[in-house]
Amino acid sequence: MKVIREPREMQQTALTLRDKAIRIGLVPTMGAFHDGHVSLMRRAKQENDVCVVSLFVNPLQFNDPADLERYPRNEAADLEIARSVGADILFTPSAAAMYPPDAQTFVEVTRVSQPLCGGQRPGHFRGVATVVAKLFMITLPRRAYFGLKDYQQCRVIAQMARDLYFPPDLVFCPTVREADGLAMSSRNARLTPEDRRAATVLPRALELAQSRFADGERDPSVIQALVRERLLTEPRAGIEYVEVVDAQTLEPIAEIAQPALVAIAARFGDIRLIDSVALTPPSPEPEPLAPDPLDTSDVPHRVAPRA
Ligand code: PAF
Image (cartoon, rainbow, N blue to C red; front, side):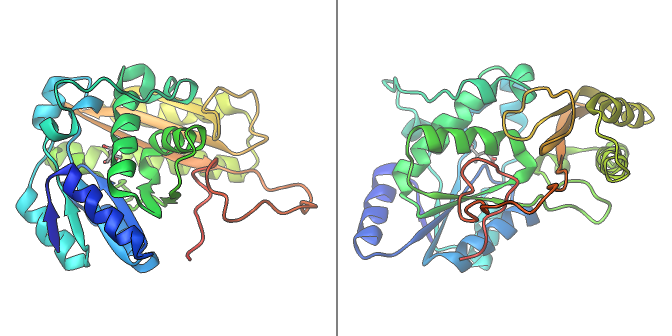
């Protein structure tokens, strides 16, 4: 596995590969690898000729400097994991290389960045969109892989890619969970043992939403209240939001008649965790024209089929 730190060197390498029709699969990450990252890397490796993993703790997406400071970093361990999974290139630039002092260009995706985490973390999705746009231009991937644990991030990136005609196929992959249901996240490692136990209330609350939905409940406010009530049974959980929104626009809905998302954010000590689940009503009739199964640009929870 080659380690590249300079954006220009990475771009030159990508151009050379592209000239030889070698397809790059990109897995953008902020490091502190867990099995969720590993599953993205495996898939990128399987579906492309070359797997590039980017490791960059992007300062632009942290609205709280203390959160950036505390973000887990372990480059040596990450390098070993990426190597063992078979990544071909680890691209790990410095902040100064990604954001030189004279940088003046930023990417802002408006509406879909505003609800949910957008309200709690001003500027966060501008930072995500900007760095992902740069990573696309530097690594020139044929496909790019993201985890659906960060559902709103997937929606923001899909909207950006569509609006700006970015060429890579976006592959949104299912959330990988621990045995007790907690969604894997680099932040989990920083939970105290008590908070780690308490955090399982998140998947349990979402399971409750799923089961009430399966029983026929279609009122978003009923599901929202149930989930909130369940979270309130755990005194260690500081709820930031519980929302049931349209899965595409992330805007509030009056009824779950189309794919919806139950999204939650809660703090355990100073660790903020998010999780979500999609609720998809069965189609009433077989559709006359099936949607293009390869078009994953709009609805992130529709996972792209394997190549
Ligand atoms: O999900 C992440 O790890 C980051 O938000 C991403 C997509 C790598 C951008 O910094």
